[in-house]
Length: 496
Image (cartoon, rainbow, N blue to C red; front, side, top):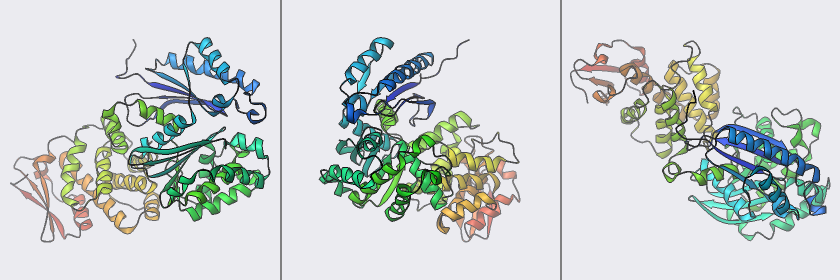
């Protein structure tokens, strides 16, 4: 028997200058979480600067890779398949011939992106995860570098330059001074780059993701998730200079850095150094989302585009895993009385915690808190700053075990200030109490109310409510202490 999805998956084949990748995404989701992700290194752009033509060996490898990816996409019954070609195919004299061959062989349509289109899609990929992104997106590939400004959900000025890692290696080899001259020659023409001063610089591309791993290792950052890992410019320049000058052997020791990337890293680091100096950003932010995710976002219906990525992910997780998915929004309303001064960031994190507060109910009870913390920390949230990831995970940790000692609590202490820690503890304990009061079932919380009154935290419950039989629950006292109240009083006979 064949089981049908509510919505078929969608696929994107990205024919780049160095590699070809197929990503298949869940077509019904706001966040492009890959159902399938595979790449083949074909080096189509190798030698392009000298010959003007695609690498002949790479063409045959690319034909085979695209054939495999098309066959897989059809077997997965994707709703639509976009095949996008970028700098190497765009610039090669025989690029059009290669496209015609692909289309005739596999009965597909291949779209060759202009530099402007590639830049816009990279910017949209960043905004897919960070809707309020403000600054300059720098997307580095094998054949080209795209720079584009973004603000308020809009794409601004953009430029494409032949500064991909393959192109630079071909033009400058191991000559660092020659590479610097080449980079400066192109960047000096882009007068609007100075407008990036004091705003964020978003680094996109595989070579820069590898540099992010080295930065995480060098700074001993406790969270190894690459997306939205960020550094202050001064610290970034220090580590990037180290990457640009250190030996291949020393870089091989960094966990998670592909050996295939190592040769390109010194030039990629040098280029990033020049861009940071040209833009003077407030922060360097590494994004794992770019052109492919931009194409995914472009295809989304408006009803999904306007959703907040974090809230959308947590809501979908609740629908799939929570015992009573509708309970999350009730929790948000019920806990609101404890957080009257919440700003937009705090409110969003509390809403996410409410939605995710019951998705780990089926974990082994001895490991539930630990598993919840680690899974929340590593979930595919898009555009969530690392501090917010830790704050959300820590809130859920407290929700499940009601305590914050142990190594996971130590990570939170390392990354959050005392005000954030207190707020996370309070939110986690409030969620723990809410689940105790309601058993996680819908509609019961609506009948109760929490009130801070004269040094006491009062829980009002109506006659016959299940919570009216609660006495001496430790969560009551913990929540009261977290709110600097003497105790929590169970007041029967009132209710909301």
